Image 1: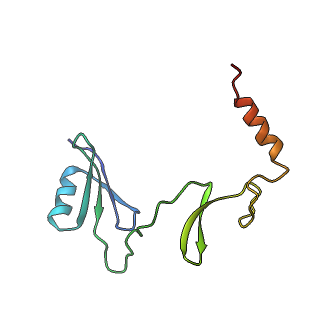
Image 2: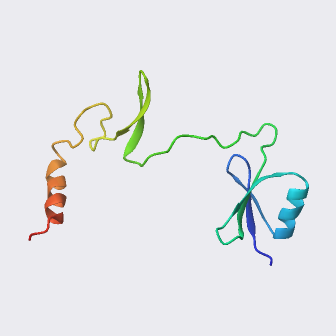
Image 3: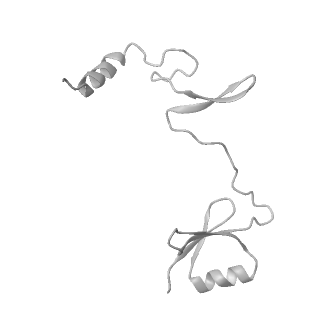
Amino acid sequence: MNASIPVYRADGRLYDHVTERGLARLQAAGLVARIVRHRKGHINRAILFARPGEAPLPRTAYLGTRYSFQDHLEHGLCWDLKRLGGDRWGTNYAPEEVRPLFLQVVTGCLVER
């Protein structure tokens, strides 16, 4: 089968698309660090070893959603929610100008019994 298999560098950038035969040659040369397979067994992608001067993909904590950010406290890092007004350091999660819109959405979601 001539399926095109994506091959990625160690830093996560796409290196090339190869066939299964080409992937076998890369493995024989000792360049493949990991092969990711689908649960049904076919190959999804391959990841190469880091080359000299190439930084590997950094391992980080859970990235969070766009509604949260990592807050730097004196004792370490923690996740906090972003405020609707864009203010990062206040305690007001819903500024006065957006509260009517918020209440309109909430009341629209209520179901009468």
